[in-house]
Amino acid sequence: MYGCSDSVENKINIPMTSEVEDLILHSEEFEQKILSYDTPGGKIHFAIGFGIANSIMVEGDDGNIIIDAADSIYEANKIYNLFKQKNSNPIKAIIYTHNHGDHTFGTQYYLNLQKERPKIIAHEDTDFYVQRIMGILNPIITTRSTRMFGTTLPEEDLINAGIGPNLSVSKSPTGYVKPDLTFEDELKINISGIEIELYHAPGETNDQIFVWLPKHKSLMPGDNVYKTFPNLYTIRGTSHRDVKGWIDSLDHMKSFNPEFLFPSHTKPIIGEEVIQDVLNIYRDAIQYIHDQTIRLMNQGMYPDEIAEKIKLPKGIADSPYLREFYGTVRWSVKSIFNGYLGWFSGNPSELDPLSREEKAKRILNLAGDLDVLIDDLRLAVEKEDMQWALELSDYLIALDSFNEEVKDLRIDALIYEGSRSANPNKRNYFLTSAFELREKFIESSLLDRTSVELLEYVSMDTLFDVLSTRYNPDKRIEENTSVCFLFSSGLRKSITVRNQVVVISNRILDNCLITIKTDEIEMKKVLSGFSNPVTSIASGIIQIEGSSVEFLQFLSKFR
Image (cartoon, rainbow, N blue to C red; front, top):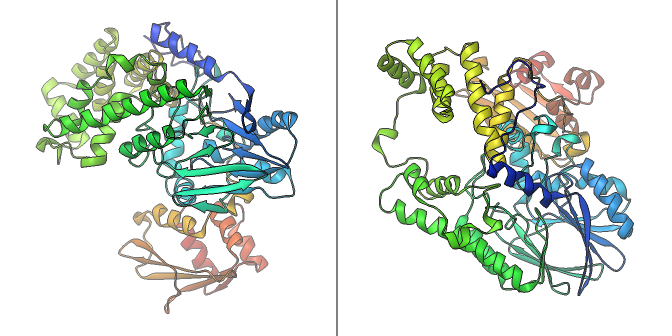
């Protein structure tokens, strides 16, 4: 048996395959340090190995700018204590290359650090995507990110996260701060004598930008280049990534002929010729996967068939910038297919397939007996046929036959597959899933990442959207119940339950059962759990026209 399901503390015995050894060596890419460079335009300091994303400080005349603020207040504190030893001038601006938390969640540290508020600069869509992740998608994205980055794995079982040593977002409250200067296509600005050019560059995200410092001959590509095969799709879940746009963005970067390239993950690349070679290989690999997927799609092949057929050409597959330490070719193929044609493979048998439970029952009928399926599962694990073991255990779960033995065998299969994978995303996801099945597994007791400071940047629209997606129709709110909200800011909101759907409106209705008068921050505290609604009503901070009891009962339907 491969699992160690008697104790969650047991260390996984990592098999030393050549692929795993390569992943361990890849950790050298993230040695924690500050790297300093004298560019033609001045000094640039590069923090690597602090959480998952790099943070960059550019020295100006009377102040400095930060490009990407780290994945947490916890890491931002450590980084800046080293940055200020290089130059202690105030931070004049913080630039987000895109919306991901590992680039934005450390910003609040800098606001707490100094009286003068830095200018926060980003693409005009960045806040929209942050609100969505912090709002309606927060529970599932958090769960899947925890698995993918291995944030609850024992420290000794986490090799790295592919593009960084580890993700630190859970080590402090979320420090996101909403941008106050945004742009659509490009922005040219001078801050503390630093000439800065920002360009929209869709790629890993739709709001991705790159930063070009013409005097410094330096380019910051965000997440559009790093030293692994790119995550054209991420298993934690994301909207479709514009692969063709990613190629165009890389061509745009190449046109500047940078002498210094400072990625938001992995080490800097120095030298104009070397940088051009890396950008060429990177963009050509992406285009190859894109074009060949389209070619085979047009031949009527299904996504799984295409994923089996496409391999990178050997001439570029051997590049250290294309090792599958983050994205993979096979996941990328499926995402490109889905982006162009949607989830339907084209196979008529997959348009309205049998339910999981019904398919499991049919498999059981073929096997003849439940014990035969369990015997097959035992045999698959014994023969180290672990993917088949996982699929067999899926059938047994659907048949409500997930007993202790089946669970232990599934754990064995997850640990076997995960510990042998050189792709950290797969490895961490499988190992975390195994730990979650163990009886002694305790969900991480990491701190709640929400803070009162963060609520300032969470919009009321986001919170009302969360309410609508939390409503369980089984709880049954009386049809056409309407609750209206009048905020001291002048914002108006109403909620109407109609056809068991929570309908949000920005106008006040004539037939409000209950009307709430308060300020936005107080309602945010109530909806986020920072304030007790009973106390807020009793103190008069929340004023109610109608029944307080009915309002509290109404709120309870969304918990």
